[in-house]
Length: 73
Figure 1: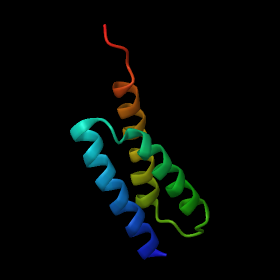
Figure 2: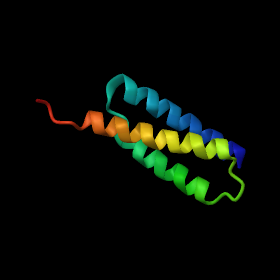
Figure 3: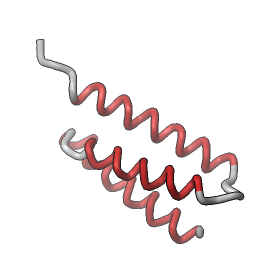
Figure 4: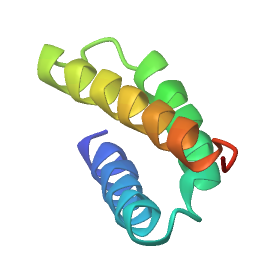
């Protein structure tokens, strides 16, 4: 269980760094968040800290998508 989460977290961290560097990886973040949602939904004993971290990542990904998809003026 912890190993599964660690793998998802590490994958997310790599994609997040790529998104910050080149703005190209944000589309993969949506998929990763969906996988993380599925993982969390299957768990009965997710600690509150993990749930908060997950919610923060969803907000961060939403902001990245918003800024990378704005039309140029």
